Length: 73
Image (cartoon, rainbow, N blue to C red; front, side, top):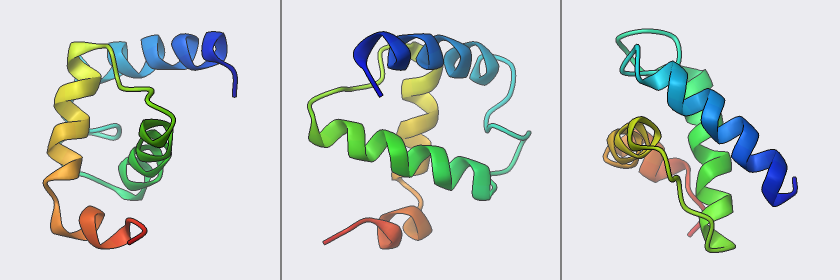
């Protein structure tokens, strides 16, 4: 995914997460885990979430033990 494509998707995610705490509502789901894992991989390339709602959500995901266990060591 190129930088422009990421910015487009980032804006969509940030808008959605301004409405709900997680992608599908009030609780994290496998959708959150999947997207957060992809954003983690972008971090390896020094690409960080820019939107405030997206950053809040990612921080919440990163604090979950299940998410932490899913990351490569």
